Image (cartoon, rainbow, N blue to C red; front, side, top):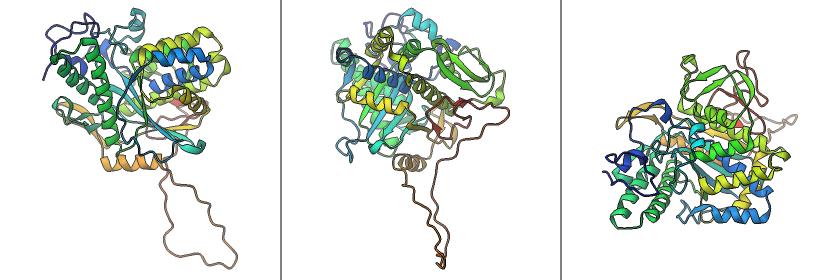
Length: 446
């Protein structure tokens, strides 16, 4: 199923060839890719936290300016009305691989040059970053749940006739479907584009909710590719830690082992890296890329704790401008309230976990991550509803200990210990992408 090319501002000239269908750009059909079109993995939650904390630090008139300028979608959130405690929230962060802003316009040339990822004609509308941020009530530790983008999953509503595919593709397929329908119905192109984006968000949120076992989603934050670079540019340098020397000519990554400070362009390479041909033993996988995203978020949060980060009005203005161009929210999202939560989380009150996969396979000609739905649902429930620790009973002299096997509890796997070949970072070394990653410092990662 294809749809006509749209020669309008929503898709600038050069976005795709006249004969190429919308779906190839929107849904990221599988095809050979050159080095400049490799997908960039966005540290979107870090970008959002940066903007949110900036809002909390800025004057009221600036907050109003930001809030009025953001794109918002009036959608039906999965599980709406089923919230048991108003003080808790589940927020889905979505990062798109589109090389356009939220209006469908091309990015500035200097941004394309820094990203090293082609131009507005590259990329598509896959949700390459999917992360559920669970903020519990009572000041308890929050959890960030990363969903690997290539997990094979049923797609809500079978957009464009596709019932199952990589979970990230629900957005692009739904966008293509709705855009085709609205264009045929004669809806103005700019309006059709925004309505299609809303439908795509609705589809992706429902797909993720179903995949996680019917989890309620209270809000969403959508960030385009440009937001990552622009936020990193506003707050650079960012401190990270690399466990081993690594290079990747495709992304421009060239890092030595240990702690180092990155410019915005280097930060792009850090989260974009997907291979090391000089050291194949590193064997980067989709889960390692999730860990890089998490590590950048944690490092950025550490940076945000410094009082002088937002002392410069120019920094605040840059963050707000980036948000207005490259971030979208649901219509009910109170960004000012989230700003206070983000400040709390920046203090180390969150742990990140990547959902497990059972292996790799090929479905419909695409390389995918294979998953066990029952395992996914169980892990998610454990993370969202952790067991309350119980005190170990103290033996009383003369008392009889009950017989039978001891009770067992499931706990997150411990973080791997640093080794001589992987120098410890300020917050430990986490080269195992399946281990929980705590916040509150700069972690050393693969």
